[in-house]
Image (tube, rainbow, N blue to C red; front, top):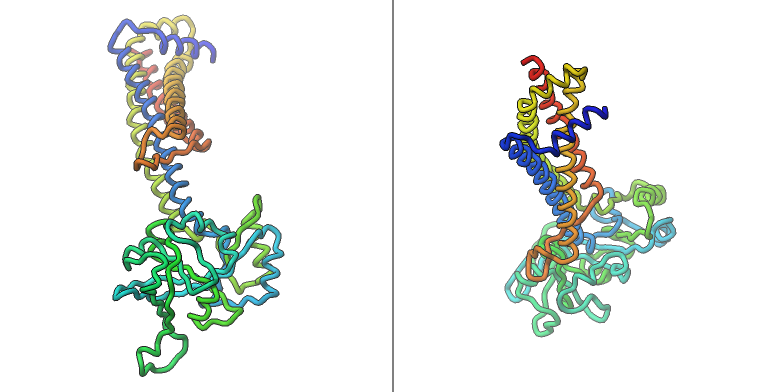
Length: 399
C-alpha cells in the first residue's frame, strides 16, 4: 500500500512536463473544492432557515397538546386535571377553548378562530414575545388579542372604546331557525393587543379569556377543546405522552410539536432533500473532471507505468497508484472546500455579512451532521470516480 500511495502523491504534487495536464488537474481540484464548498453552504443555509421558520411556531405551539379523540369537546374534571398536573415531566399546562367565529367591525367582516385561554397560557407558550402593539389579556373587561393580518383586514387598532368589535358564533342546538338574529351568540369586545407570529397564524386566531369564550359558546365548566402542556427541561416527550395516555385512556389524542406542524416539517425536509440532490448532481459533474484528469495522467505516464511494471510492480499496484491519486485529489479538495465554507458560515453568524432586510441577517447554522454529509458525499463519489479512472491503467500496460 505504501508504494502506490507514495507514487500517487508524487504524481499529484509534482508538476508534469505537459502544461495541459497541470491545468486539467488544477481544474479538477477546483471543481471538487467548489462542490464541497457550495454543498455545505447550502445545507447550512437550509438548516438556518429551518430553525428560523420553526422559531415562529415554537413561540405559539406547546410541547404537547391534548385533543378530544372524538368531536370538538372533551370533559376534564378536577380529578383528571390533578392527574395531568402530577404526571412526571409536566411543568405547566393550560386549558383551551377553541371555535370558529365571525368578526364584525364597522361594516368589515372576517372569519377567525377564537382561542379562549386561562392564566397559565403565558407560562406554556412564548406568546408575550409576539405582541407588537398593546398588551396581553386582563380579566378586567371583555378583551381580545388579534393577529396583525386580522387587524389589517378590519383596519382595527387597540383600545378603541368608541367602536367595539363584535364577535358572533352560531348557537348550539337543533331545530329550525325562524329569526336569523336568534341564530348567533354575540358579544362586543375591545382589542387590547395585536400579535405577529407568521402570516398564517396572524390571520387565524383571536385570543380571549377562557371564561369569555365559555360564555360565548355556551359550554360547561368542565368542557374544553384542548389542553396544552409545557414539559420540564430534559423531559422525554414520548415518555410523558405514554404516561398521559395511561392516565387519560383513549379519551384524548396527544400530539407533540412536530406532529402539530407536520405539513411544515414535511415541506422543509422535502426542500432540504431536493436541494441536496441538486447540488450532489453538480458535484457529480465536477467529479467528471477528476476522471478526465486521472485518465490524462495515465496517458502521460505510459512509459513510467511500463517501467514500474518491468521493475516488478503488479497491475493491481499500478491501478492503485491512480486510484489513490484520485482519492487524494477528492480528499484535499473536499476538505479545503469544507474548511472555507465553515469559515464563511462562521463569519456570517458573527458579523451578518448577508442581510435579508436591513435588520434581519440571513439565518445559517453549523450542524455536525451536515459536515458528515458533505464528507460522506465527497468520499463516496470520489471513490467511484477514482475507481473508474484507475481502471484505464490496464490499457496503458497493454499499449
